[in-house]
Length: 283
Ligand code: DGL
Image (tube, rainbow, N blue to C red; front, side, top):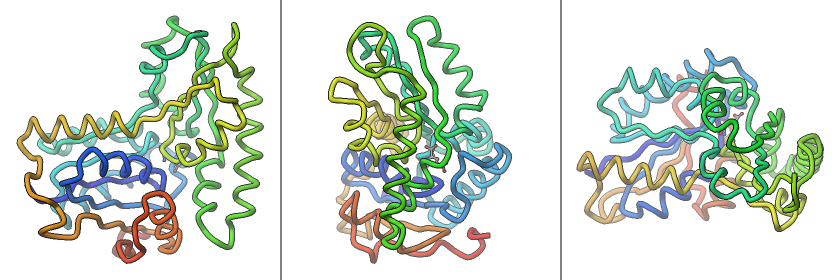
């Protein structure tokens, strides 16, 4: 089926998931929506994030006839995936959540760090996830206010330098607050990136934490799950997506240049694939 897969995030973080999706599903078409005008979600109320998520899902269904939706945002998944499933029972729906269970399998020291937005960390969904693994390892959870926003700003040419300095400062202070990283007894040896934006500062984190610490993100697992759901529903596209229509379309409710710069920098996509989302989604 040659209708697109919808992917959305509060901003550019979900591009890290889109990159994995594109790699795993090269014959599919994608429509990506970055809700930059309302970012960061992680510092907004759960009710607000739920309302945005429902509005965007409805828009992608009505205007783009998406055959599946990937909520490429941990915060929106925590706030709204349950309601979305109830509202759209027929729609293959994939959310993202911090990879606590995979981290259990990887950690040797049994000390695992988790960084995510305040919204994700404060959610009931995350509390249940943490409770399900508690006791099997020691988890150190850190909400990273300001980090997703600084990552957004780092793609805007006029703000890039200041944003990069802010990223370094925030990463240092948040990781210092979490304890000791390394591979010795009692050290945190595995770090879960519980926000899709954080994938884009993996190099900075690696430098800060050292080569022994493993960083875990969810893009590949989300792509595999999307593929499984589409296959099970008989919805995989069998033709080359490029032969019939534009295979990638990216939209933002906020700054178009920021999305263009991020899409180019992280996915190598040309600026003309990006456009402004309809005005009604911007307010
Ligand atoms: N990228 C989002 C996440 O995975 C949220 C970032 C934000 O808008 O606060 O949680």
